Length: 135
Image (cartoon, rainbow, N blue to C red):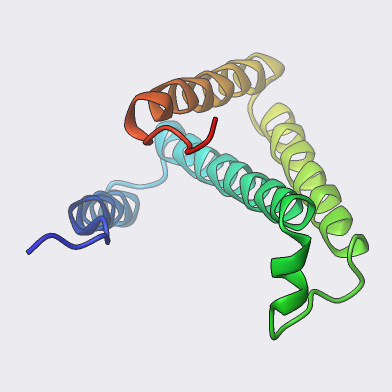
């Protein structure tokens, strides 16, 4: 029986996470291990940004559905604006810390890697996601 939950992907991420935690515990926090932590922060910021954009797009395209929802987002549109500001501050703080803790070169290379993998994922998603109906 096939499930819509990506169980294999969840298990794979869990196994990799456990391995990285064990490496950090027993081998120590190396530069590579710490840079993976920065990439995790980047991934969180990207996912938060996509979630906020989806919420904004949903409210614009389906206002009648939003009105039918049993819950309301307080202080809309201030709430997503605060979220976007928070994402921006987190990304700034991450690269500022990279620059101070390591070097401007490490921060620049990390930034390039971060943007490239998001671009590759976005390009790959076009081949994975089904085409939108009516477009």
